[in-house]
Length: 296
Image (cartoon, rainbow, N blue to C red; front, side, top):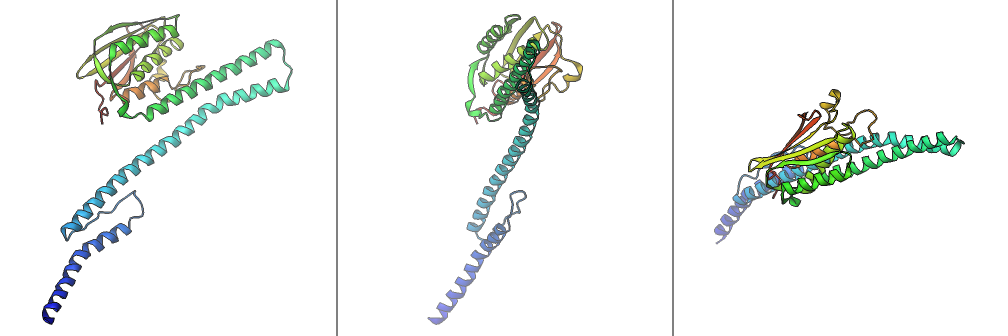
């Protein structure tokens, strides 16, 4: 009897040690984790249960590491974005402050007073345009693919060209050709592409005519917007889609084409500028009929 109890106790002690040893190694490795920047390999080799626990903890840490990386990148982007925004808004705000100080401290002839008020209105429009486009850019950055929806491409482009025509009655804006295509994406995003392309052509290119054409298949969609304006200066062409890039004396925010590129990327596509057969600029947008992120 006593011998059996002793043997059982020894076997129990050995078995407990065999089971607990990998758990102690796993616990020790877990305690040594101080940051998610670089995770050590975790091993629970020994009993099957310990190995399963080790694998589960490793998977959990991998998910945490991925989410930590995304959060760090998002914070870095937000800091850079805020710094650039502050820089871009500082100039018109300084101009507003200077003009207000002049109006408050000096008695000006009527003509000079009107000139200062005109400068104030110009700076106000620039600030308003910048803030509006910044809001659109931020909304694009936070777009969840779950909001993508199926829509008729030609119907959206027809609405966009009619809307652009109302905004710019001095310019002829028309949908020249469109292949009937049902696609998945952001209807408002594609309308924004047309809106900004036409606004650039009219305000900066002094275009009299803008045409929109689109073709689509299961492989993808191509939207081409042509104008007969003055084109884009050579020194701006390479950086035209970057944020806050604009020509001298422009009242815009410098975000119009950046928003176009953002929509191209949201729709798993690309956008480029070229010379138009009409004499101005051709904007070519190639996007997926069903973006890679849709439906996830």
